[in-house]
Length: 275
Image 1 (cartoon, rainbow, N blue to C red):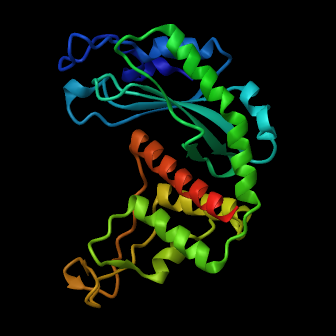
Image 2 (image 1 turned 60 degrees about the horizontal axis):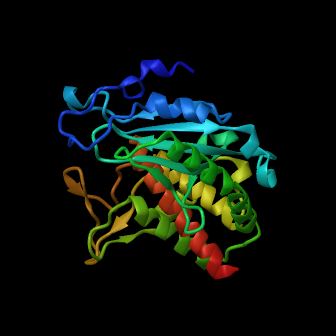
């Protein structure tokens, strides 16, 4: 893919509001180091620049694949492809962050792993060295077998209806802000847990996680909330029986990674409790 069309990829001038200690490192330079390790960039997303002066400096996320990672833990079988994610911005707000991710082929959905034992690897712009990038890549690759074991663990855990409902409710809380005392109605939880394809039907934790994650990230689910006094949230110009607004898809690349990571942490925590 042609990465030069992205302003954040080719940016090589420092942002005006960064300190003198900040070292401007083009994303293209880090990309070259990653590519030298056998990785191929398969997707590039950059956030919308709200002001002209932010264009070229906004957050961006790159996804990479490498056959060497795919062979580890036998994750290449089926519909799952492991990926390495690189997040960055040039405005001084963040450093280069490397994470492991999983890409599900049949739904073009991506889940990001972030746990205690599979941590993000960060490389700061201040004091940057190419050696730090190479070490970050190696650390990320080394965590792939643990990620494979996590997936297998999720697949072996069957949830009871009560456990399933609590998980979906907790997943909804990660993205959707309820007012104090407000509760989800059962319709909303059912829609968050709705399978969009036959392959996602089932009660094991892996399937419940995948369909809930997709509905949280992609949106399109009607919001059903009930207020503590028994009334329903105002929708439009009148009080309706429920809030008819549909949830929105997460379009910010960094917010997508952040919410995905929290969903993975939630799933891993439940898996540890039930194992």
